[in-house]
Length: 358
Image 1 (spheres, one colour):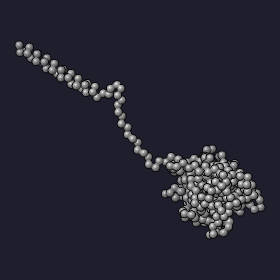
Image 2 (cartoon, rainbow, N blue to C red):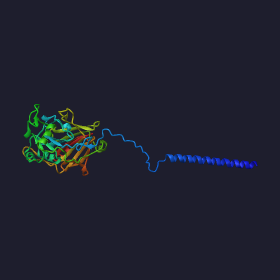
Image 3 (spheres, rainbow, N blue to C red):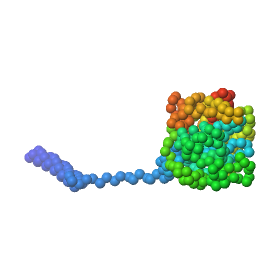
Image 4 (cartoon, helix red, strand yellow):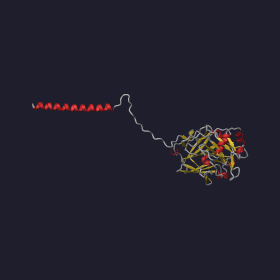
């Protein structure tokens, strides 16, 4: 009798355990059923909002590669600037995106200053045109500014080969003479009058040709080549036209000097600092007794590129009107910033005209 009682008690205990387990499962199932969404009810997903970027840079300036919030659509302005020792320091050159340094007659150089990112309050002294300056402006579809001209340049400008304004027609109006200097080293034009000249000559003010320049994302990608912290570039034995560039690794730019005098901008007393220095070897030919030059800006040739404290042997090509440094047939990457381009005669040669040291 006692054995039977024990058996019944054991069966009763097992039954109660099973009943308890079933009850808990039903409770859990009921809770899950309550918490599950209905067939037509979509679960609410909370997405984290991405923070807005402050100072977001969207547009790359066409001639400097610098990123900015505003797209630069203004037509480039190309101005012939006097580089005679009596014309120094010049005005507006610190704001030029690119400065081309060309030979004129008598082993004297002149600047072609290209302004697109900024247009200075004052530009000058403005000097006379040469036909290869005009061809440069035409190739880049730039509005060309000069005061005076050679016979070949006059023919091109008179035929409106390129949109331009010349101080020969607007001396004392759009062009002003400085009392601090003597002619021909004292003709200036303001940025405001450049715009007025565009309107007066019914010239477009909008950029229509984009330069095929290429830029590194940072200077780190540019540091492949021979170390070159000090660069000397000679157009002749005349020390007034020998440029020395010194690299500042902190700013990652070069400072230019002539005869030990740092090149500054007369308008703001700031030194001219560039991120790239390019030397192009270009055929020159003397065409008259005055020493005027014919300069072949079409054929391409040898070149050297200096940036980020290094030197590289490259080439150059005329691509759709732009003088472009190239490497293995494609545009060579530049460091973002301003550029100084020297156009030296092939007869002089890069090997004789350029020296550099660490």
